[in-house]
Image 1 (cartoon, protein in one colour):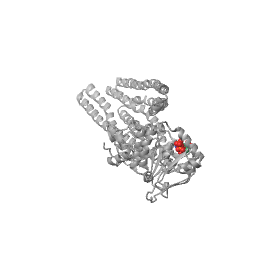
Image 2 (cartoon, helix red, strand yellow):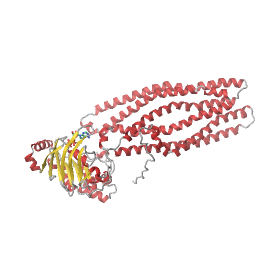
Image 3 (cartoon, helix red, strand yellow):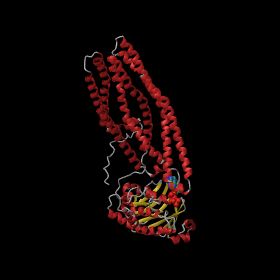
Image 4 (tube, protein in one colour):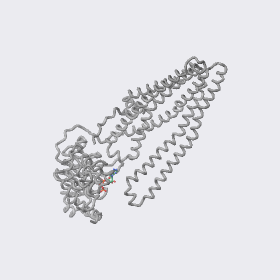
Length: 592
Ligand SMILES: Nc1ncnc2c1ncn2[C@@H]1O[C@H](COP(=O)(O)OP(=O)(O)OP(=O)(O)O)[C@@H](O)[C@H]1O
């Protein structure tokens, strides 16, 4: 299916954090100002038309029904025509307003997601994905709503000014009477929102809580089932759902207390207009048409006054939401292109010099590691759990930057490569390969989206994946289930190997690529791995004896540094620690 070309966001957020949230969001609004202003202008015109209708009713009643000086039909047609015009104008105003809102949301979403994609591993170590999801959805919506619906509500409030002017020109005393309840409606509206607002927040966060429980259980359903944890999880969900129920009930109680009050206030306004207006009619100071028209004005004016409270709360919510979005956008990506140095032609020589590395949470993983790997060499990294083996690969591919020391690829510091070039030259097959819910072709071609079917098939063939893919109902077009769970561990592993093969990097890091599979499948994968390793420098993080067998040289790591380096046989003979680590490894070796 051809994908639509992506529209780049029209604008971003002002980068200066010292500015107010609205000023920082200003570039976004400005980018869509034409559409927003058109919508606001249309809605203003619509309101002017709307305000004319009660006045026409007044004239119609007074002249056609009371004085009999003009035909009734004239007014009926006139009002119907104005209603039609107002309908068309309102349709356009609403259309443009919603389009502005969704364009703005599109921009904000793209800006936030683009920034998230630039962030490094360190950032994702710190933040919770649920928290990010909520920022990327409900916070963006809250800001969008205020930026677009806020001005629109303000324009609607202008109706009060226009209508009041018109009422004063008809009957000043009755105009004041008609407006008498409006301040009370505005004040009570603000109070109502203030009372309801915290509960709405509570509902939002509790709904997010339920979503987290559901999400974790769907993601972790295999563990839940494996440990017969279904009942426990159902109870956990019931507790979260009960918290939501409580918050909704509290919200319902508040609303049922406030809404009748808010609904009845305009009726008091109507009664006042009838009382004062009626007395004036009896004394000949006003016409019947005026009383009817002012009734309509009272009803027309109360929604904008009610909405004042809403706009204040929307503003507060948007301010809080924008701060959470800005927090993400203000976090600078720490792994970025450093300089524009000429990159040497790839040979695959990797040299780690006195590398120290401390994870963002303070854990020291590497502590003065020295390692030189020659082009085309395959080394196995061996060590006890937590020794720092995987960290070596993460630093070589620059998922993190070294704290001290240097990693040189073909004589140039990895930090001096453009990131895209570096990632092309250092490939990683992780221990838990991640597959996207797209076709197998797209999964294999992830690093080379332009690859042809023939290239994808060749990579899959070399990785030993071609045969099982062809057996699937749609072959290479088969869409794998979420995270590739419709495939077996060994199949996923082979798809990941094919993905790396297609990119063809001169340096390859296999992070324990066979840990998830049984010995028979491991044997088959080793065949694929051998193909993968030929002609390139390879680091294998090895947990199994068989994997160590793939390497020319074994490097033993302990406490974040190299403690022994040589062939398997030499290390076995000279390093008691190596023998000890191997003994643990062999114990973990699954029985075939
Ligand atoms: N993202 C992280 N944040 C903080 N500390 C981490 C992180 N990843 C690893 N560590 C810590 O760094 C140290 C080295 O971890 P590393 O994953 O490199 O070990 P390893 O030798 O690959 O272990 P294993 O064989 O168990 O996979 C460990 O103490 C580990 O707890």
